[in-house]
Length: 98
Image (cartoon, rainbow, N blue to C red; front, side):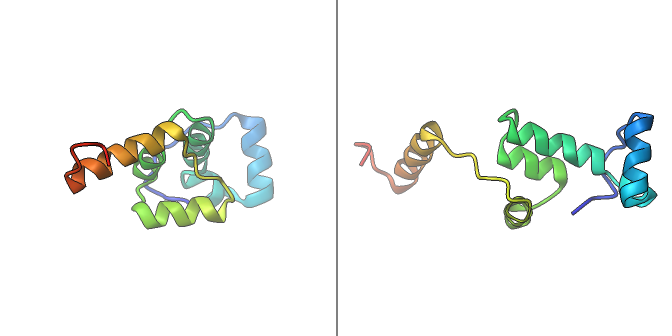
């Protein structure tokens, strides 16, 4: 899913020529490189899933479906779980932590 409103990223000539030969000029022109950079940043843990969705202009469901279609795993660790549990406790009014 590429977005024509994403910023333009200059692609070096040899790579640009190979991409055009494989996918056509429209593929290279409509935000592919920006999207690829954002995905790489997410996969390396440099940005969150929410930040990735925001960069790509997607809502929660669109972002999840997009990453699932690309077979990109959900990054969720113990720290994320603890943060979510703390938020849940706060929202439910549990002062004792459970």
